[in-house]
Each structure stands twice: as structure tokens, then as C-alpha cells.
Image (spheres, rainbow, N blue to C red):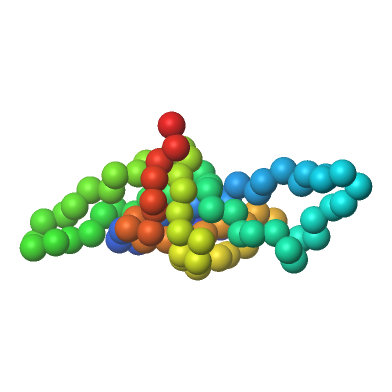
Length: 94
């Protein structure tokens, strides 16, 4: 099943950070912060303002930073995705 975002929404594949060991201590999953970057998998058509369509600035394949509590989390085929509005994306990483 494919997911296609609508309007000004963006589907992001969450990029998990590597598990690192600090000395002899491991940080449990419950203590980790939520990742705030991901890869854009799909984008909507854009949004209408004053009767005209405003095109999306991000495109598929972009690596982006988004707000910590932005969007709606979903799981599909064992992968974690996030659906956010384009305005919740803070930056594109180049």
C-alpha cells in the first residue's frame, strides 16, 4: 500500500540515529530523544492561497529537519514515517 500525502503535507521516513555506547553504559530506547531528521518520501500537491496553488519547496529525496513534536507518526511495512505540514519542516540539509 502506498501513502500519498494531500495538500501541503509531506511524508518523511524517520532516520534513526546510530546506537552508541558511552564507556560501558548503553542508553535505553526510552531515554533517547526523538529523531528530528528524515528523508522526504512523498509530497502533496501544495496548498491554495488566494485562489492560486502554492508549490511545495521540498521534494522527494531531500533530507530535512523538523520540529520535535511535529506531525503524525505512522508505521508501514516495518518502517517509521511521519506526516507533517510543510510549515513544520525547519530546514533542508544539503
